[in-house]
Image: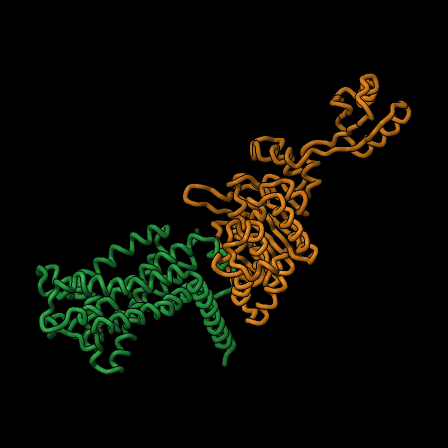
Length: 273
Length: 322
């Protein structure tokens, strides 16, 4: 191997080690915040009750059970909410002196935010588990077999990583934690509600319906419903993203990660407080 | 003398229309302590941020530990330790966990990081606190932990940005002790401060900056000498008016009496002192104490920063010790 290839491999190894150290740090921090853990575990329970029973009692989905229809939507919403949390967390990190400390250390410039992304994914797993348990308790079932269910959750997690990078981007660009909170929550609510996450868009006015159909969140939940076996009827014709929801979600998530992650690394390396 | 550990030439940096640094040059010899002294907003922190690779300069060049801070930033980072003005320790981690994390980031490996963390906690008197979360630390403990974190990889050059600002007197004294022990171990230190006594006590050389310009530099003694000539002060056992007047006549026209002592300019320093002591002996007046006094650094500071760049006096002061 040439000398430069050896050096590159060494840099890659150190970079992975740095990302591991950063992830470890965020995980220790995560476990020291019992109030945050409690809140993030309680939120899915509240959502299942709120949307499954409060709203769900007056929502009828043709040929199906609303709570079964809803659960993939709630998995998708938790993906969005974790992106909002990571945006605020990154904005907070950037306003603290610890950023300068990290930036004067001989570590890979990408390590800290990759660590942030990975730790968000790991800390999201217990939340997902609580949500699955809640779903099972209210009658939701994955009818397409374990393999498809696992594939569905992997797809949700991949999308969570992608949306998480968008959250990191907002956190890096926002001037403060409060700003990040406001900026990220507007698109999250629009993306979450103008979609097939909670209701079937076929009843919406035409212009809104088209937005809802082409919303990537609709592709994500449609993919989930297909893999879990919670679909209600065929997808609307002519909407490619809903006719091929798994490919759409998978492809879009990869594109977002490939485009946004390097931008975030650059922004992080060059940002000055 | 070997190459300087820090060498900066004509550093400049603006933020929008604000010129934080206009022209700052400095050299710090390996193993010495340099204090960058200035008021708030003088450009101290900007200088440190450029030298520690946190901020690119608009103009000028700088080398730290032999590497260019711009083109060889990654190499610079392996050789420096930095303690900034803001606390950089993670509140939700214990002191030991914080140090270990920094050690791992410095690629020391898990075992060495743990060992260095333990050693540093001992060195900085934080053994008991090491197991506690940093959010329970006092201000002084946080600063010491921050300093310890900067040392985990045994850096050649240490940057301390206002290491004692905001600390109570006990905390300051503890920081000073810690910094002095580092210096005796051979680390090169650049510290910024707005406290003259801190610069006086810790530094081998002082660089005074004001509005982004170096307005004076030298050893503490050179700086004091540059501002005014020394004074001779003769103190009598008691405030005897007749005796004070006789001593005053001896010291010349500019003599001033205050309390039981008389002071006057001593243009030739020690030579003047020798003359006066000999003449006092002939005079037969009982004397409690005779000594030379230099202007305080406070006077130096206010003189060089008051009319920076405009007054001939400050220009002369700056040149006189360069």
